[in-house]
Image (cartoon, rainbow, N blue to C red; front, side):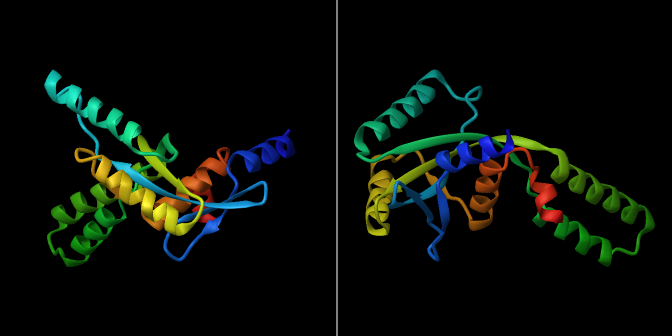
Length: 180
């Protein structure tokens, strides 16, 4: 069963690697193509007026109409990342001389570590594709011009690697692979 699943995953996610520019390199039936991943700006729909929500929906629909290439939207439970906050608390712990404050800081650091191990948040990602790096870059420029409301934040290399690991090895948690 595992071999069957592994073979199936290889056909679904044909990832070859990541280029020096941070683009995902894919291969399918002997053809190479490239992708880049972006995190769209998020909105709290409960806080928006009906007109603002309609504007966002219209903008997204406009992007799909104007953009000629392939767009894939991926939704997945992504692990919490709070290393910057942990670094801040470690620095504060080293600097403090107050034992009560030290205890509070250590507790907060432990909470952050536990969150990073166990918490998952639903994240959305948008993938853009091209047959070559220049075509992908042209497609990305077209997407930026087609959408004035959506500001796309490019996913970092670590996020892309973690995402690909989660997609290709869903039965293994990310924390397990980081410990190995």
